[in-house]
Image (tube, rainbow, N blue to C red; front, side, top):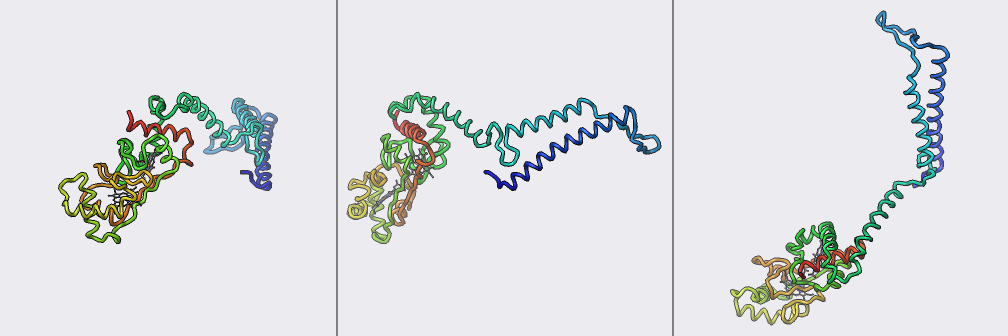
Length: 298
Ligand code: HEC
Ligand code: HEC
């Protein structure tokens, strides 16, 4: 960012005055020494009777080094920014330096990506390089929620099985990553009442748990048709359109511990997958999509 011209002038004067000042100091002190003093002269200061202060000229190597640093500073301030708002003949900025490095990295990446990025996802999954990159991207951007093994956790879907909330074809996976998802299941406690919740829960559980009370489940089935089938489907096998899970299998997005199904029905549920379209470029998302696709398709 440019500073105001007042500050700029102040800094230029300060820097220039320092350089001129050093030169002057160097010049006068070396003249003084060579004109008036010889090697071995003392300043006249004496301590403890015999401790004298010599006034020898500066060693030559030291003098040259000093001059060299001044020459260096002038060269540096010509090439690089340092004199107020003057940008230096190289036009260097820390940002342009970062930009150049970044350009190199992006060029190398584009070269690497070019070997597979135009393949369809179903072909890209056979490219080990692409899958390695996908795995790394996944570790960086997705594993906090879906786990480093992509097997998910309570509320975060397992991406390695073939059980999908929104669909497991390449385009849908890429859409899930790009735009995000927000599955909402409204609360049903008020509409169903305690007894109704128990009945519907018994019905939902009866698909995988044969110990459920048959009459309770039969009552539940009727209520399910009224309240739940619009999202979960008449057969309770779910609906990709709403991200409503299949309730007939033993894969649970939330959990099947005692009471969880009842609580879920009573209080509702929601899951949010953040959109990554702004965070990641299209190519990275495609590689990620291919990686996720590969986890459940050999
Ligand atoms: C902040 C947590 C979070 C992060 C980070 C996250 N996800 Fe998700 N993801 C979720 C949740 C929660 C869902 C389920 C959304 C729902 O319930 O509707 C989900 C759903 C998905 C789905 C849809 C699954 C299905 O069954 O249809 C895919 C695919 C997916 N995520 C991939 C990714 C990828 C790839 C990344 C990394 C770029 C990622 N997610 C990062 C939380 C996250
Ligand atoms: C508006 C659509 C909608 C309706 C209506 C609906 N659900 Fe859901 N349900 C969902 C969604 C979406 C999820 C997944 C929530 C998430 O993404 O976390 C879900 C999740 C569930 C789960 C958890 C499944 C799991 O794998 O953990 C159960 C159980 C469930 N619903 C039962 C019901 C029952 C019973 C009814 C009727 C009383 C019902 N749902 C009505 C949309 C709906």
